[in-house]
Length: 262
Image (cartoon, rainbow, N blue to C red; front, side, top):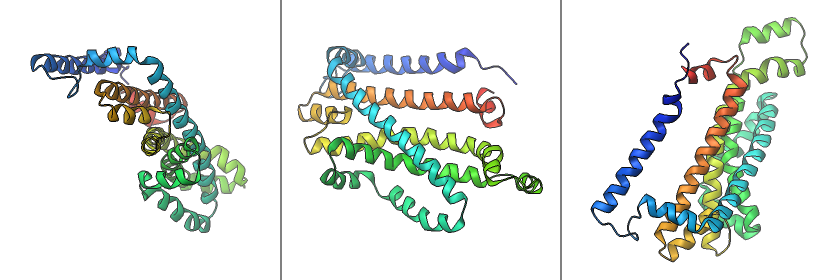
């Protein structure tokens, strides 16, 4: 197995990003594009510094909501996956409700939730709803994908359902669980942003999406881009953190994590 190259792992993406930002900056300066049409990266960086108190406080609100929603979705998704793995009847009874929540656009649910809940609670519920299904579906798939010969071996030794879960089904489900967790992490952030946009349209909220809406009303385009840059950065940090957690848990024994380093 080849060792991961530091250049390929870190420097190459940073070099591509730097080249793209340089091309953006050059294009804005060359064609003299006004800031209210397309601000240059240097102006966005200046806005990030100038409005750091406002924008980073909003980032903290959005990031906290997304992480809380992801934690709740993880607990709920894993618990429900374990429940339906024990009974086909439970799967048939509960999965349709989970699918209905998944296929209903969150931007359509958010205004309704804002009627019944406080803005912060409505945003949290929206983020939870979009992060919940991938974790549930992937964990259920993992629990059901156990090698039948190993199940028969555990049956031969009269292993209890608890031992089968701890020593067989749970380890087998971990790769799919982490795949669902990475998807759910990104979706939790998207759900929080979508709900914050709805809350912002109602004149309530304190997250990044609310600041984007507020800047849009004032035609403060550099601040909109600065807030969008923070949203992108938050998404990258969440994905990178969950990928690192997946590698830490799987790299010693599962090919899916070892393949990331090839």
